[in-house]
Image (cartoon, rainbow, N blue to C red; front, side):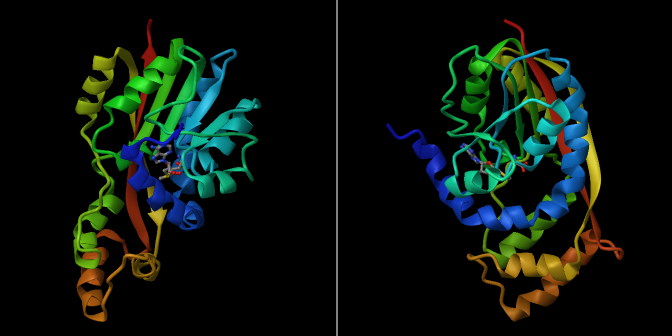
Length: 253
Ligand SMILES: C[S@@+](CC[C@H](N)C(=O)[O-])C[C@H]1O[C@@H](n2cnc3c(N)ncnc32)[C@H](O)[C@@H]1O
């Protein structure tokens, strides 16, 4: 049976093609990822035992950091084989699977964390439900993604229509909505956090990031207007404001 649902198939080919590029972007994200994992780690450490899963692990940068803090193995899950190929260099336990169709037994997992994955999807409820079902009673879900105030995605929202002819498909939702959706499934919200950091990126690197995308239609005449917009977000010392949200939710029963 195909483990990847039809709804995920389009995203799958996107991530298969992007695995290498995403890995190469690690040095830009690492500051934020370290901050985020630093926030999650003490909570995860307080669980005495149990399986910990990195959902949508990608190249497993957050997974590797968390594993080294915990000192015990975690399981990385991703649907993209090229991503899992890179993750192999960082984590030992890897599973191919779909966040909308999880391959775990109900009530079997102590902790699930999921970073920058669900923003790929406008409709997230099925994933929330799958996560809830797989968690043990008392289990924790750490859910982190781009916040509504993330300036990098604000900038992309203005520039992508000029370069790619469409807005980015990244779905950034208000925190109160996500809280309500999780509570509807049965989660208790333990805490919410906003994690801000400055990402180093030069205008040249950003333009290069846009113009080397396979679907890019970045004609020379657009460069001037794109630069003008980008300069309003990227500071003179080559930094842009990034912000992740982090929701710590718990399965009560
Ligand atoms: C932006 S990357 C984030 C990777 C990692 N969590 C990190 O923060 O470095 C998104 C990852 O989610 C994976 N992904 C997206 N949709 C998925 C799905 N439906 N099932 C499993 N993995 C998925 C992609 O393959 C990709 O590796």
